[in-house]
Each structure stands twice: as structure tokens, then as C-alpha cells.
Image: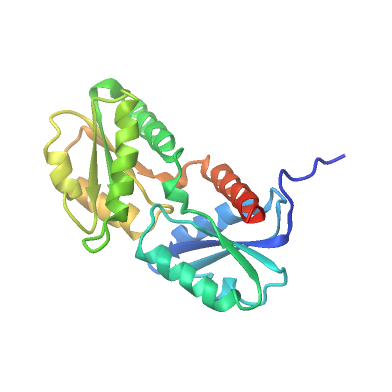
Length: 250
């Protein structure tokens, strides 16, 4: 007999809200793969992906939902204005007729530092670099007008630093200082760059790649965006299950 799901979400639609990309179809394809992996666990009546940019759109994800309960999970790496705007759209569209709840963004989970450290170590090992002699550079989006992204990145960096697996940990941002180039310039030895991004989109591929090329450092390796890690679907499912429990306790 097949065991029952850990929490009953058979009357719930899970909406995975993401930034998405119009320039990088592979980013949205990867997000769809993660959504499919969560759906395959059979916890929810329906699992939908909605992207602010690219397809499937968030509006499409919010349309024609048959279940009475909705759980929205921000598939992004930090709290911030993007999450505020996405949740406002969900509430406006569904709360008049549905029971709507939301989880914290994926990237605020306390397990993210361990995953980021694992990606950095694997990239350094593959390059034949001793992790203990290398730095980790966490790259996040950043925002000059909203400090939540910065605080989240620094919190993750602090936890990785406390693990003492690396020579040091630094943060860099796309939209505010320090830039990737500036962060790497202050590192005397090798480093691994880990992108705090959910998918291989413009920031994770274009911005990080261009910055690393500009440094002309052969001892700096790109560990890729954290969203490519195979552990992400399980983490998303776990966050969703916990979100169901929290909603049921209200």
C-alpha cells in the first residue's frame, strides 16, 4: 500500500511564484522541472508555476483554480519588493473566494548556507583547489532601496563562515556595492563564486559570467546558481508541507 503524503494537501493548490526570464528560456524550463518534481510527490491537488517574466505567467497560474485552498511559495532567494508584489497579486486575485496562505521565500531557509557551501566545495574540488585555502563569494541581487536582500545574503555568509570550511566568505551584489569584481579583487587567493539565484537566468549566467571574465582570475571558479542544486525540489516540498501545517494551525 502506498503511504499517505506527510500532510494532506489534497484540497490545496500550491503556487510557486518565480521571477523567471524572457531572455533565457532555460531558466523557466528549469523552474518548470522543479515544479514538476514537487508535483510528483503527490502532496498537493495541483502545483502551478507562475513567473513574472516569461512563461508560464503568474496570471496564468492564478486562473481557473478549482481547489478552495491556496498556498503561495515565493521561489526566490530573498524577501523584498518582488515578493511583496507577487503576494499582493495573489491576494488580490484569490483571497475574495479562496483560503489563501503563504510561506517564507525559498532563499530565506536556514538550509541554504549548507547547500551553497556544498556547491562551492564541489566546484573547488573539481578544479583541484583546497577548499580550506579558498574563499567563497556569495552573489545576490541586492537593492539600494530595500535592505532585506542584503541582510539575507549576509546572514547566509555568516553561517558559512562559522562552519570554518573555507578561508573566508564574502558577499557581492548585482544592484549595489560591493560588485562581484570588487569583492574578488580583495581576495588574495582562490575563490568559488556561488549565485543566490533560483535559476540560470540573466543574473546567474550573464552578469556573473561577465564579472568573472573581467577579473581575469584563473583561480576563481564559478559554482553556478544555487537553484541548480539537486536538493532544491526536496527543500521546496518541505517548505510547502510546513506551510500547510502552519496554515492549518491558524
